[in-house]
Length: 232
Image 1 (cartoon, helix red, strand yellow):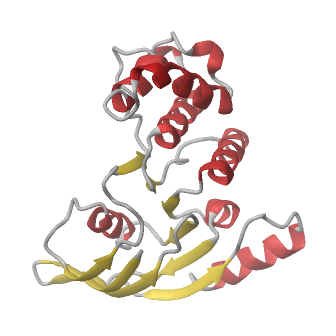
Image 2: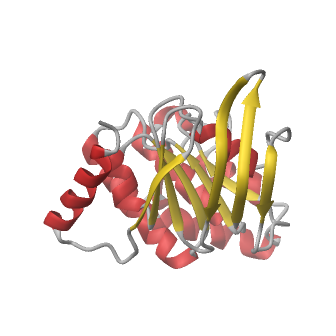
């Protein structure tokens, strides 16, 4: 995917000021910036939710299967079970003979195969995020958009969920755009980390951070320090 000179304004207030970026297919691109820096605006432009902008977006991968989403908010349907939440989005895309096996496969991959008949109000916040990840990866799309999906989770739960995400991404290789203000999350998941300035937003710097992630703590801390300096 290529973004070419994306400009977005609300009235006379410019939000995005010439964003040009290559988003590599099958990789995780983390867009990192402070709250209000236009990250979600860019994501909504890419997803087609915002139409009135200047610039061009070129998609290399097939777009016909739509997109998967993981949001900050809980978007599970409360009156449907965990199984039925996945079934609801998959039944028009997956043949009936393969549907049950697909749902069970992805729930098992996030460690939730035993709670498929539970309702969302019985689940913890971390479990709901895991259902969201299973739902997003089970949907047969090339693109996955994530908007602050680990917000409000404690560090231990967040790290566990990111491990599940990495496990699934290593198998599915979706093109992921991950919006976050959290440097730790960006470094943990992003194969490319795009650092935004404040409004009007430009790209400050891009860091390459490919999988498999180095288990060198010193290297990870050095990258975090480099990024933190951009916000001083």
